[in-house]
Length: 70
Ligand SMILES: [Zn+2]
Image (cartoon, rainbow, N blue to C red; front, side, top):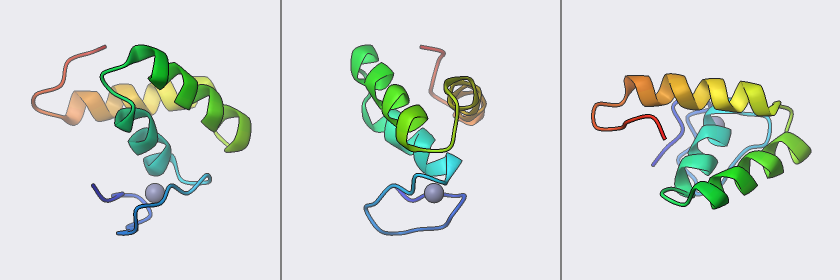
């Protein structure tokens, strides 16, 4: 799964990229606990706040066809 924002095709996550942050959290699905840990991790080491990540996740979910709010 590539990042649509920074266009990386490498299996890495860029701390400064919101698209990568969303990918990272989604990679922890379906475990809600792991997703929470990822959000904590990103908000600690990355430049995005928890609210920003949650908002991005919500938008991403809204755009996905099969996903429902978790
Ligand atoms: Zn990215």
